[in-house]
Amino acid sequence: MKKILNTSMVYFVLAIAAGVFHREYTKFSGFTGKTVLGNVHTHLLVMGAFLFLIVALFCIQLPGLLDARIFRRFYVLYNIALPFMAVTMLARGMIQVKNAELTKAVDASLSGMAGIAHILITIALVMLFMALKKNVISNDRKQAG
Image (spheres, rainbow, N blue to C red):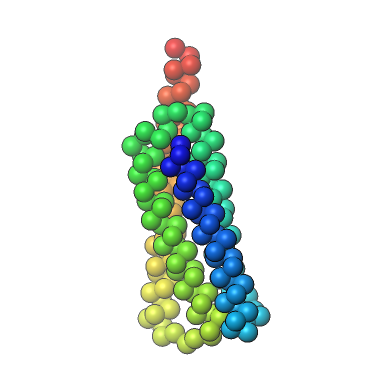
């Protein structure tokens, strides 16, 4: 449980840092338009800090959740995929702020990396749902028996 709360706190700190970076980087660059940088803060806060706070609540009700093999796999994959996605968003946002010209290959590779990150997050979330369902069923059987 402590690991889950610590993970939530790390994502919270990263989200706040991303928000500050967005504000200061755009101000320093004299940029006033919309950029993906503003979304990094929200993604890390909701998909990182808030998600793991909710998972911590599930762990209270489902004590076996943390020990489930599929949950451990979710945890590892998700904590690879979410930072990977945040970094691709950060790169895209910085490019937008600087109004840098990208070759089609670089633009496509950045989009491809973001796509891979989204696919990995989706797989990880499916694993989380599977772990939750398995533990709810197991918990129900223990209470019934």
